Length: 399
Image (cartoon, rainbow, N blue to C red; front, side, top):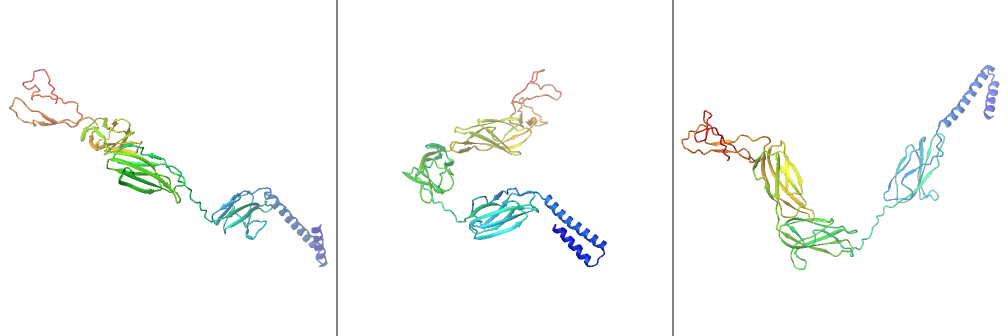
């Protein structure tokens, strides 16, 4: 009705100015069309925008009633499909009793960052597009950067449990692992080792404090020892837990075969050793043109070297998991030649020698140590047996 009256007024004003009637009608028609088009486009814009008014925004961080220890705060919420921007508000301590308005702004993204002072805060977000908007979603949080000091706990009644070495165990000279259980609320541990006992100390081996629960000591001297551990913190100590142990002369692994500087072409070569102590598993290591490592719970291991010819060093080591001790053998060498053996090297008599003696010393050199036997054939230049050997027979003389 208002638009119709305005058009009628424009028509009356144009007529009063003595404009031609046809021109006035055309102008009024064009003006009316323009107004209708504007109304139509406004209606289409509202029709094309997605209705987000019922969407609830999920606030991610900081979460409801969060207690932060940092003044740098990243605000983050779930993006809303169909929203073109978000209205972000932040006050302190709350919207009902706001004493400080920190922010009230529009942002196209779903994250904002603020550096704030300590205190309580409340923040809210709503999504907006050209035709609709959601309700505000609101959350509260607080910032407190004051360090919380927890007083130390009295641990004087706690007992430290010792794990290894076991009480009164016999160990070989070498590295010994000391190990005990951790104590809750303990800051550090005091380890002491003496010889032969704390009641009759002749040698203080170790008196050390550490934060861990393991410690290794290398013992060269045999004899009786005692060790003890206590846990400590700022206000209290536990009692010492104590054990005894003995250090005996070191036992070594004795390598039996192959012998040192042994030369062989055996593809499946047996390695043997002997040890009188207690070992859970042995490790056999070969180093040379190629490196090999094998494990065995027995004192023998058959190893196939295939085509890996070369000179190798080998040794065996073992570990006792009960006390953490280890033992190692000496190192021996051998040579492995893949394939059949080479011909022996004849030494005596030399090629072309003339010998008048009735007995001849024959001497030669083997090319491998694993030759089972040698065969000797003695013929004259006419391929007849030398005088002294029965005709028609071949004598094999084993070395």
